[in-house]
Length: 69
Image (cartoon, rainbow, N blue to C red; front, side, top):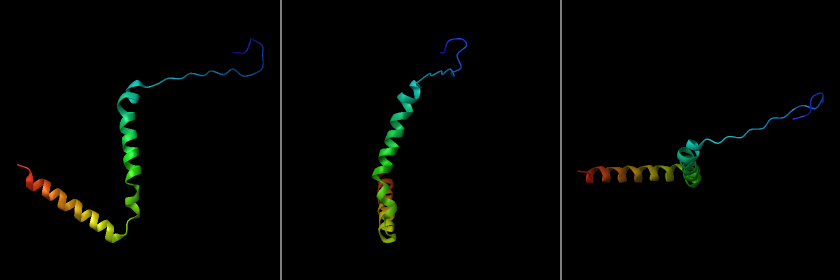
């Protein structure tokens, strides 16, 4: 802080951390970011490749549901 009568502006700086964010949400954000980076190549597939992926996912999900009791 400047002394009384000085003309330079005063500056105040404070820092705070959100511990809940650091403990709960930050790992989720990092995981989603990593997953998005790994799956980024899917947006550049051709239509034939995209339909093959969708068909494979559909078959996989149907097999999982057929095996569920």
